[in-house]
Length: 72
Image (cartoon, rainbow, N blue to C red; front, top):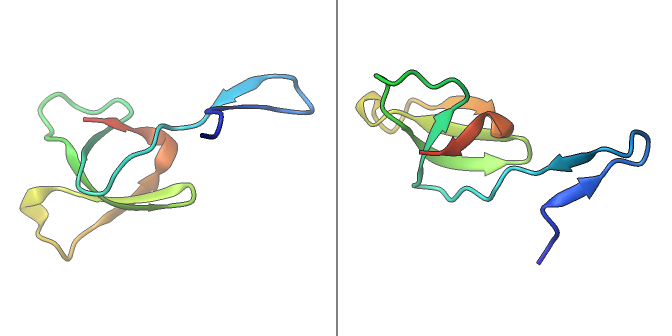
C-alpha cells in the first residue's frame, strides 16, 4: 500500500494526499454550508472530481478540486 504522505524535495515539507473517495459516496466541500446536503461523488480523475446533488438529476454534474472534498 502506498504511503499517504509525500516529502517535497525543495521545501522538505510533508503534504498529505486526499483520502480515497469512492463513486457513490457522499462528500462535502471545504466550508460546506450546514443547510446544504452532501454531494454525491460521481467520479474522480487526477486532481478533479465530479459531484452532483440528488435533486439535480443524473445529467447535471459539477467539477471540483479533489482536495476540496471530504467524506460527508
